[in-house]
Length: 85
Image (cartoon, rainbow, N blue to C red; front, side):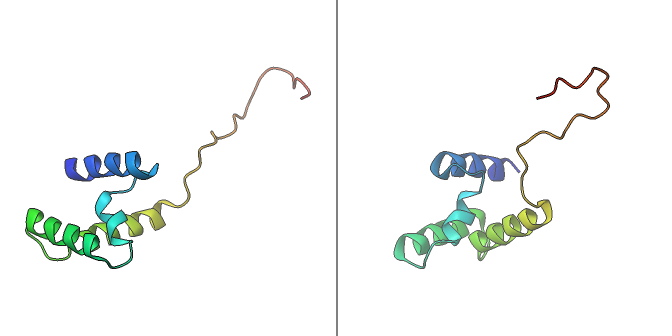
């Protein structure tokens, strides 16, 4: 999980979104830098299609998680009178 966290932080620095770098690269159009990066990650992690697996995992988790809500939930049960604004 440390690799996922570090990659997500790096993805945030690069794009402003917490998304693993391998997932970002896998979503790019097919080109030489993308292919070179994917091959390097396959060799580093000793698996075939590493970036594709990370991308699939990220997309599946994003679908299960749903949209991120940044607004806090409304507070209910207030005991003071409504201020009127």
